[in-house]
Amino acid sequence: MSNARSRRSGITTIGVLAVALTGSAVGLADTADRAPKPRAKPQINEQMPPPAIVSKLLTIVPRRDWRAKPPLFDMQGHVPLSIMLHHTAGPVNTKRDIVFKMRSLQAYSQKPATLGNGRKRAAWADVPYHYYISADGAVAEGRDVRYSGDTNTDYDTTGHIQVVLEGNFEEIKPTGDQLAALETLVVELAKEWKLPATQIRTHKQVAATLCPGRNFMDIYPALQQRIAERLK
Ligand SMILES: [Zn+2]
Image (tube, rainbow, N blue to C red; front, side, top):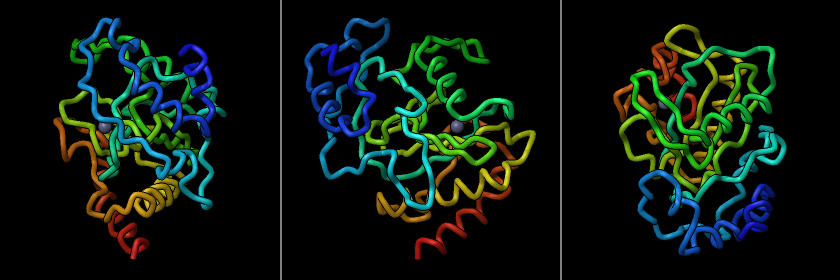
């Protein structure tokens, strides 16, 4: 298994290896200091598109290009039924590129953390989001979209494609480049997974959180409308 895990960063091998990993009776999750997640029946199959390729209109930095580490333990397979929008709720870093940001996010995600409210969380297998859009409009592949994401809030992440935008939209507004990239990404994801515009949701619609921030919520109805037009 060690070879399989180390090879897992290669996009083309993810499908095969995902089956191998979820099919194993004993994984790292069984020995780690956390409650094991219920095992969903793996729903991975060869029909599902590689996650880094959603559009010819958009360049998405794949995991191998930001030198992603493999997930720490088995994740739960799911089929995307909606797209969930988030903000990072942190400051925009204009001095660093998206490779640095993804590597930092993964390092943070794969360690236990203490949250703002004092609650502690265990390490996640991988970054919690499936796609990351930085303030300059660059887009990166996060967690393999064929596995459900993670959250610090209380809702079931199963079936949601998690898309996060860099910034705290309680305080600032998303950039034009960021919104253009988001719109194209969401349109292409919606086409790929056959999702209607009504299935483009925001985090605060399903959980007690300010995410993705009031300045994003101000433009969300118009964004959803434009996406609905593009999906016609
Ligand atoms: Zn959120």
